[in-house]
Image (cartoon, rainbow, N blue to C red; front, side, top):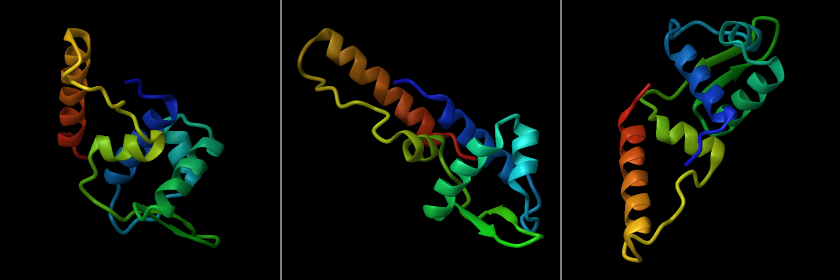
Length: 116
């Protein structure tokens, strides 16, 4: 399992939004500057979150973004960005497969239990 840069950015964006006042609308530029992520990448990830009901967007001169869904697991966020993060390994094939299966299950559990 490899977490790519986009997933890391997604985690940082959600974490940043989760720390803001719930009524505050935050611009993409503010998120981008605060988390040191390019504005294009920030807006791309926010678009994915909006499309999936995790973040809500507001248009206009006072527009921006606000976290809509709470208690998101790291796994949920990573899987939304990367799709099929954990490969399917048959745990009954041999020692190597069993080891990989156990490691992936442990990682999946850790990511599912870490909530923002």
